[in-house]
Length: 176
Length: 280
Image (cartoon, rainbow over all chains, first blue to last red):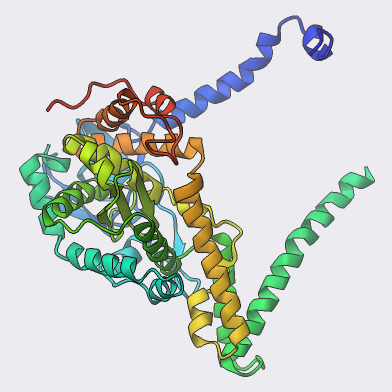
């Protein structure tokens, strides 16, 4: 490229100034990205039901329960725990149980909006879909299908209570 | 000026013609399933509205039923390509408890999460829609502790919660056609075959995207970041994933040998926070 190939740059004595809007925009994006789950900010529930607790502890008394995709105001933070308010309700929630982005709505087979959390919960532990079984047959992948049936059956043995016990024993999640 | 004023009309036509054609095609398919053309009766009107809902959802996104159909089928392909599953109760127990602990704090905690180990020496991990996560035996052996395992699984969980594989199907007919519905209920062999072909080509697209081409570099860096945060909030050492990547790099690995469907190790390591490796 010759020296005169970009006359616009040569005509502008201070090209750095032109970068300011982009830099400011980038800074704003970074601030927004880092603004996740901070006191004074907003959080959303991402489970079918989320308990609010009287203390920042998994063993504390529940003070209320909020449904899926409920917007909450973050009042206070204490480590990985957030004190939130949702209208008349308020209480402590482990930060991992909330998200900074409103969960997406999804649609059911009739095209109506469903709660993602509810639909996925009811789908749990169902066998491989008929479509996948038929697909495996068309592609001669019967052995893989049998393996997945086995995995699916094994996974039925892992309950939510097992995960609770694991988290408690390992001091993970809200049991940290 | 005329060129400008014509552009929106051209744009509308470009969008409207395929959309209309798609609906018309779907309506004909629906008629063939029912055996009679729609006459505008109450039932037919309801069915047509349902069909419209399906087409609308197909354009706008993929619902839970389609996600399950797609995810289960992609999982079949992954397990078929990578030597089947390791049937070891202790390994399965560990992978599923660590994986489910992470998934509980992910953005889709109530998805049907299942974690399996592929019977392959290769060093890679994959995920399929609807909560399927697979780690190869080769990579599983490299994870020295649960912190490093959590780093690997967290990255794959992030692909599912971010719907990265499903995003590969944007513009595809797989969701709009309702493949299973048409294929199983249609008396018209041509319609059924067309629906199956749409479905199979959609699975091919996702499988190729996951296993052969890989996601875009930015998608992978994003999954690293989300997976890192997920491991940290769950209580695992946040440096777990980085420690695995550094270990692979020190073994002289490059992106072709280790994580062949991911961006270069050097780039991934550079983008993760420089945190100490988990203590043994």
